[in-house]
Length: 77
Image 1 (cartoon, rainbow, N blue to C red):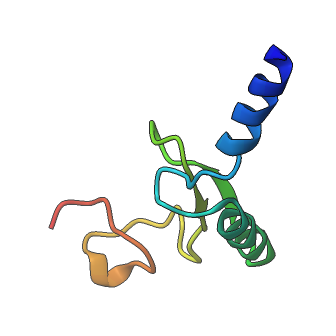
Image 2 (image 1 turned 180 degrees about the vertical axis):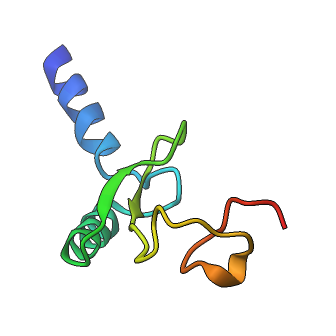
């Protein structure tokens, strides 16, 4: 009887939204789209939810301001 209760808890937990409020099917769709676009779907720091990481075309290049970058320039303006 305990195994039924344990199984029920696991099944119910698998239907819960992630830390960003996305359903499991939304997460799967986002992951598939991310991978199809050449991204990497992984955990976001200490957050227990996964996000899509995409490398910009100018990754690794030197910049001095945000207007010089596809993404975010880490140099101070």
